[in-house]
Amino acid sequence: MLKLLTLVTTLLLSGKALANPACPVCTIAIGASLSIARKMGVDDCIVGVWGGALLAIIGYWIIRWFDKKKWHFPFRNAVLMTLSVGSIGFMYMGELHYDPSVIGILYIDSFLFATILGAGVFILAIHFYEWMKIKNGGHAHFPFEKVVIPVLSVLLLSLAFYYLPICNCHATIG
Image 1 (cartoon, rainbow, N blue to C red):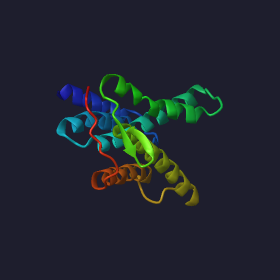
Image 2: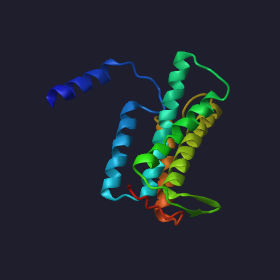
Image 3: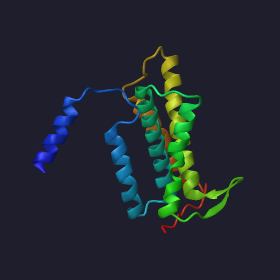
Image 4: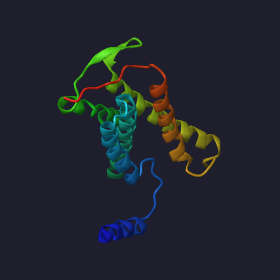
């Protein structure tokens, strides 16, 4: 265990720090916590909100990777983000049962609704941060603003799902 901890610490300290909206450690932590949260009985809508945010983070990673490869095509970012968030469909092929219900004017599965909403709020929060940064002369208003705004936005959405009767979210594991 000590060898593993030493290796991880050495790798983290030896690399160059880059400003990234999605650090690998955060992404792995969110992914692992989703599975744990479901096993602990956390409402599926809240898990879906954070899962959608995770899929949006992965979409941003893919966009950055395409930038490094200099792969550009029309509507690239929108297509990549849609594919990333749309990968939630694979959960319904193996883990979840699609059980649609009426939510507002939509007839959609509650877990899927929460996931799409979580991804959308995360993406809007990233764009909101960029807008605020431009308005402030290209500088953040406070340290770690780039992290705080998206996480706080997704947290507020989670609280809304927890305290408000937005939908009846109890996805069944198949």
